Length: 233
Image (cartoon, rainbow, N blue to C red; front, side, top):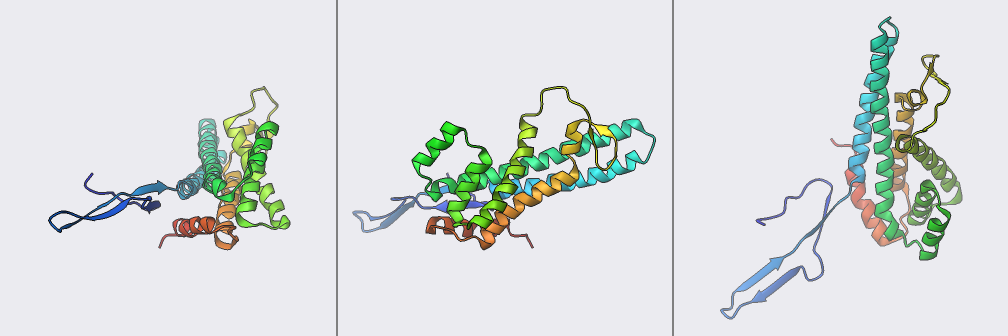
């Protein structure tokens, strides 16, 4: 390789023994440098969630226009479009939380006994994530209650996208259209996507901005992430 191309969001480190300096028999100095790189996907998924949310909101407006007309095809098409963008926004938000958790899990020193209990009891994903974040940021009980509530809702809706209901069910009321629709059109719509994406953003941004990292390693990670999720000028 002639070099390493560094992009935004990439962490660069020199591994142990990665830099050497030596002198040859002729008295000339020579050196070598090895780099290790790592990319944090959490900021990317937050950006994707925001992008899909903006699209869902635009498609909601198109759906409103269509439903003020007599064009049945347009009504169906705009509902499908809003559904697709909303589901993608919600999935991206959940993955952002999952990647945030993954980056912190090893750093938070979760006891092996706890991990074994999770596996044995098939502990819900949101509970595992909440516990890792509690330890990583030394959260007080009051903050944990709100965190668990947000995470439970994010992953409840995410699970409905990944593992949708397989049974035939009665239509549900669409709160804006006031007509019966498939459950997916009620759940995966722009307003719900806005709530889920907002909750995911809040979890990451609040902990990065105001959290109390429990170890120097977590502090270092948070410092790097803070710059990546800050609004760009």
